Length: 313
Image 1 (cartoon, rainbow, N blue to C red):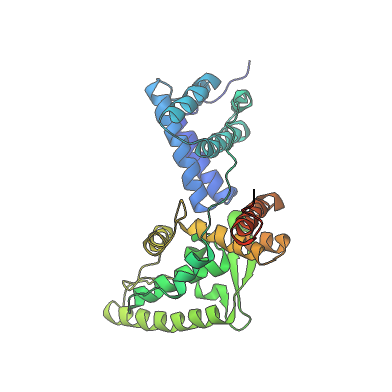
Image 2 (cartoon, rainbow, N blue to C red; image 1 turned 90 degrees about the vertical axis):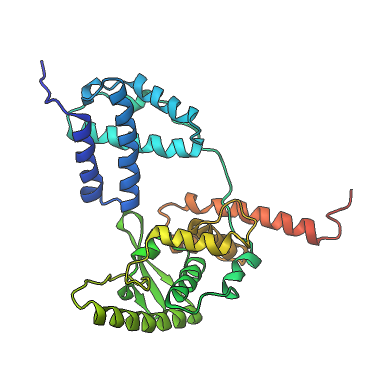
């Protein structure tokens, strides 16, 4: 007869958080999401009197899954939530002595096939004609939008950049993406000049703040606010929403829509899909191929509006 140590659910989640962050070295956003999902499941377990890992059953996972769905969670969201739980149970089997493969008995939800949302070229071009405040924060907002559109970076990647990430002479950005994988993204001359100008303004701003608060530790990130704080992913989201929502008919206006836009516009202009894969930092070409479907839809729409025979019956 084997004897197992009693493992509390809350302790197992704490250990899991440390594991995915420090050993798996997952991105901070992914770690936060995975831990949030497992904490949500733990709350469900607590309501049903379960506080030890050994008390968990497949039926409980199914009931929680159903509860989340009835609360209005979309299929795509449930795919991600179940992936987080699957990772937790895998961790439990590997490190906490939990022998049952509970998730093998769970039917994963099907992810709906949706084409990526992207900005039309005229919509994206508005960031070059928009009136930004004549302030340091206005310059930050301008650079955020241009970098998102011209590099295809994720908002977490953009927020993580430091001045040392950018080689203005060689005109490229070194980006650390998902799974701590590094990639190089080229930038064109105008954007390089914009970044150079911003770095000068940034240095002036940092000098002013340091003069007023000499003991204050200032952020090392590229993008900062006039108050000397690092620009976060949430701030980047708010900037995109503020400038793109009034001018776009897209279903969503978020930093990730700019990432879809970057890929779609490049593909429409004839870029090789393998090159786009490398620029986006996708580990698999399958993740990038979704943009070929978007491009086909673009071609169909162009034909429908432009070809003289398109309206013939």
